[in-house]
Amino acid sequence: MKGKVYYKDDNVTVTDISITCNHVTLPIDKVDHCRIHFRVNSFLFALICFISSAIIFVYVIAKRQKAEKELGKVERKYHMLTEFSGDMISRLSLDELKHLYVSPSSETLLGLRPEEVIERSLYEMLHPDDIGALKDFHTAATKLPHPKLAVSYRLKNKDGEFIWVETSCNAASRGRLKEGIIAVTREITERKKLEDLLKKAEESLRLFEENSGSLILLLSPDSKVLRASASSKRILGYPPAKLEGSDLRKIAHKDDHEIIDKILESHFLHQKKKHSLRVKRKNGKFVWVEATLSMAKDFDYCGAGSMICAMRDITKRKEKEEKQKGKLEYNESLFSTATSITAILLSGKTERSLTKSLRIACEAMGVDRVGVFKLHRKTPRGKLLTSQVYGWDSKEAELISAKKLRDLPFGANRRWIGTFERRDCVKRSLKNVPFREKTFSLSLGALSILAAPVFVEKKLWGFICLEASSDERIWKKAEGIFSLSMGNALGSFIKCKEY
Image (tube, rainbow, N blue to C red; front, side, top):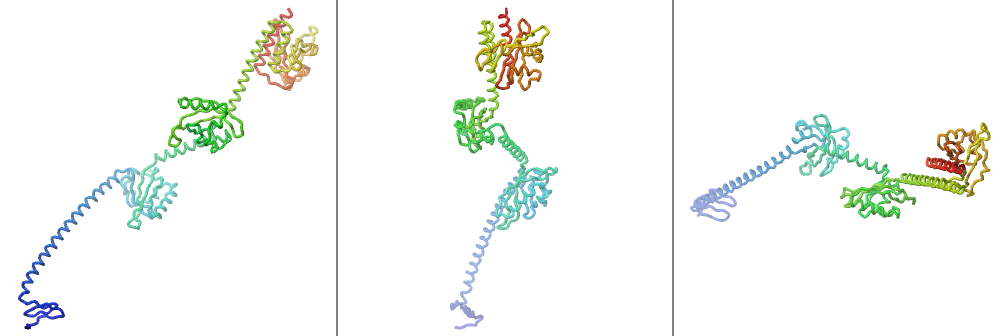
């Protein structure tokens, strides 16, 4: 049975007795019952949605509050870090290095409040000599993808003085886009002063090593050369690299190896002693050095047990000492010989003892001849003459005949007489003999003469003359004393012989 149609389309048909939907027909008397169920189910669904939304809202609010609390803690820590840190934290623009943000520590570092620094470019506060270094830093910070750079430069503080600072930077970016530079700046003025002092000290040490008269060696505990100073080239003829790795004993004289052992022993006993030894030069010659050892303090660089050996060239001093030693030995020999000659002349009182004394004097002084001359006049007012009474020739090894040198004019040698009267000796070399005195010197045929007075009973009797005919000698003081001693001994001998 068909009822009245209220609505109809392709899928739904509504009449007064039924509702058809997709070929399913529902009587109209059952529609109210479905509506009740639909309303109940819709209410439950809405209630569930409301409760779920409320729960989600409360959860989001709680999470947001927790995040804000954590963010507050981080911000407090950040503010504590920026306010109480000695380092100035700043944010700089990429184009002109303008300060976009500055931490409060700018007042500690520069004496300027943050607002006085913000919007000012770093270039405005920079020392003129450091512009190049900052430009290189700026270029690298701009071009590098993840710059982690550090640069040292000078900034002007509130008082107009420049202080040394060091800035470390990183990029402030959002994604791949750079928004600026985060810079951490700290003062390094004291560190720079220490670095400058260290550089000066290193330069002074380098100059000292290059120009010092001492050779400085760094030695291992087994006396191997670890490092040598530049003066090794001047003292030994070897460049430093040639000495490094070699044993100290290899360059030392074989007779001085015991001295090296003593040096090492005194070092390990903490006794600072100076030792002299010979070391070999590149040309094969040996030079004398004075060596002292000390402990190397920088173990990290030198190694435990390393030693610093300072060697000073003392070759000239040694030569002088040897010459002085030889001179002392020669003087002692002369004094000893003079004593022996005096004893021989006073004990023998014969011509034989005189011959022996003259021979000993020749050998001790290294002269060619020794003559004993007597001063006399043929008449009371006649010319002053001299005659050889005794003599010894070392070449002929015999007593010289007294007849060879007799009645030689001596008047021109009045200065000699004055010197003799003062109990002093006359020292002459042929080239320095005055022209008037050359007659006597030429008659002797000697290039150098040493003459000492002979007094008999406090009267000038004559003189003893030591002659060097092979070379011109510079007579030493000890030789003059020896000749005076010979003259005194001869005076006593002649007195005893004449009386």
